[in-house]
Length: 417
Picture: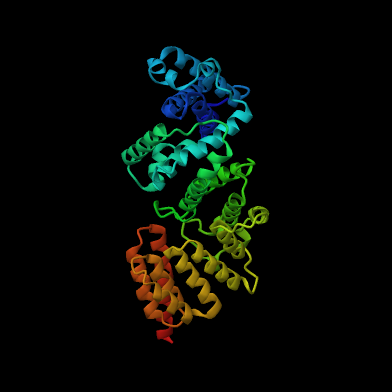
């Protein structure tokens, strides 16, 4: 087995197995010793790097990793003083004798419990997402810092504070009971929703889309649908939303990374497989009587995948009207005015946008520019310039500049004739 192949395989295994092994070890040691669990898993992968490069790939790499992690756990418990000082007091005697159990049922239960532990309402939203990226998705500190356009030291401090909150929490990494799930499921879904949006509408990096964040959010939400306690209509609605949105990812940016507006997207690039999955989970989401924001946003995303339906904007507007009543936000209000403009015309849309007075948002001026571009080019160019001044996102600046240049060229052509 070549070194090159090992170097390619280990990161793939790290991304998936790091989270599974950490979850099981946290179940074994207790959540308060999460750093111990992470150290053992990191040492396991370090040893894999050294041994596999030297001796080649083992027959079953995953089993090899679990065996090494189990042995390292035993060694750790024998050698380290911290065991006597901290761990021993916190776990029962009978659990000290047992090895970490890496069977599929234990891994699944531990991972589910870890998701609920990480989404601790005592931490800020940013801290929850950082923890989710590191502990649930296996991202390095460098990758998290890159995603948030922050310094590594800032992320380290944020993670340290967040883990201190976890250590002080009495949440147990055990098979969850219904009351534990009920008390935190909303927070878990919200964290996964934000994680997905961080990838889908990324503004913290010079990439407009972070597909890896979207994929991890989908993986974790899919995991929730596989457990009877977390397979709720809300969870299915959130997963449907993610599938519908992800179905258009390949068409949302060109090869240079520039954003492509919805009406200019190559629809042949939309993923019918993800649209079908979105339909499947949306049907599952409708099994109860509850309508959440995820149901309504999934409904809006569904209609966006139906470009030929002549009434689609009327449906989308109705869904936005309901969404605003459930959870108002400036972005939702602005998006609603776009749907309203598509139903009642740009003049009516402009009136509604101006009522919002969101003069600190680039999206506000970008939408005004879009609605004016066919009838008042000079005014549209002025709005584009204001939007460019406000946005910090390089891809968004490039998209706005491109639209403005089109208008300038159109004006120039008209003057020549």
